[in-house]
Every structure is written in C-alpha cells, then in structure tokens.
Image 1 (cartoon, rainbow, N blue to C red):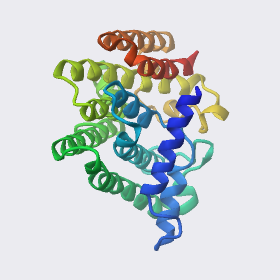
Image 2: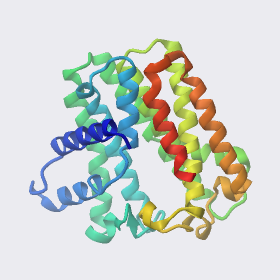
Image 3: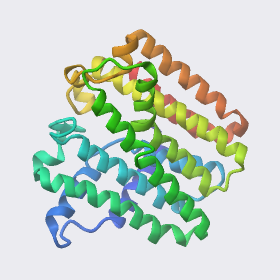
Length: 293
C-alpha cells in the first residue's frame, strides 16, 4: 500500500479516536468493547472509497471524514454482530479474538448497537460544519438505506435463510449485492454526494461501486477456500462448513475468479468519464482483486 493510502488511513484512525468516547468514559465496559473492534486493524477500505471518491470533486479530506468514519462504524458493528454465535459463530476477527469472546455476548451486542447509533450521531454533529443541510440529509439517507432492510440487513437475512439450501443464481446475487455490496456502493455515492456530482456522474460512480462491491464479496468467497488463515486473520472453510450460498459453491472456483475479474474490468470502464481524477478508485479496485492473485 502506498504512503498516500497510509496517510489517509492514519487520518481516519485519528478521526475515529476523536469521534468515539475515550475508553475510560463511564460506563467503561462498553467504551472498551467499542474501541477494541474499531481499532483491531482492518484495511479501512470503505473510508478510503468515500474519501477517494470525494477527492474527484475536490472535497477536502477533513470534510469527508465524518461520512467515512460513520460508514466504518457501521461496518465494524456488522462484523461484531456477524461473529456472534447466533449468526456466523466466529471466534476470531482480524487475527484477534472476536468481540464476544473478550467482552461476552451481551456486551458485544451492545457494542454493535452503540456503533450503529454513533455513526449517525457523528454525521449529524460533524458533517454540518462542512456541508449544507440538504447534503447532510442526503448522506444520512444513503447510509441508512444501505445499512438497513434494503441493503446490508436484507442481504444478511436472505443469507441466513439460504444456508443449506439450493437457491437460484438471482438469490445468490441478491445476497452478495446487499449483504456486502450495498455499503460499498454507498461509500462511493456518499463521496459523490459530498462533491455535488451531476446525475450522470453519480450514475457512473454507482455502477462502479456496485461492481466493486459484488467483486469484493466474490473474492471473499474464494479466499474462504484458498486463502491463508494467517493473512485473513480468521479460519477458512467456514462457508462450506455452514453450507452457505457462495459463488464458488454455485459456479466453481474458476468461474468465480473469472466473474470477479470481469466485474473489475467493467468497473474500471465506468470510471472513464473521470480520466486521471479516478486513478485512486482504479487503484483501490485493483487492490481488492489482487487479494486472490
């Protein structure tokens, strides 16, 4: 990863540290649980997508941080809840013990809830310093839609209900586009919203986000089979053991690889109208696909 990406990630981490209550804030148990997962590592892909997209329209990094951090909070909450015994029942995340293994299931549930609400608190308090009310409302609408029944939650529900069942390809695509893809697309759309993108620009960036989001989950499916546990920070083979609906399970590894690469190339084509200004988004898409090479 280039120095520039590391600098952006450092800025995101500093902002998250400032937006979240200190670990010794009363009650400290929940504050420690929240911070444990937020600062447990991770690529910060979603904040990078928000900030890089906003940068196409010359939105300063500082202005994009509230939305970028809000989405990272929501992503982290979803990981905490996904790891719970009632869902994926994973003991490790990013090479560390899952939140519920350290703080207990009740505190992990509450930590996820706290991060979800902190995301919208952060947006409502911090974003108005940089954007007019209509843009702030648009950001809240984008994020709430992507995180709710129409997005991440809806995809998670269908994913759970599909375990151990034979489903049609359109159901598989629904799961991936919503469970993972919706929030990734939201990152790009939020960056465009902050930049007051023209309708045709928003449409092109949305198409890019949708393809990158779907490719990201397909790559995750593949890595669950061929990935290195030490690199992934969690056990592989979980999808097969839980009989989850995945691209390799439905189409096989080679077709799944081909689809991820096809989506990658198509996503790059969607960025053509932005020329060199979209170089960062192209690099992020490449980093995503290179995980399986």
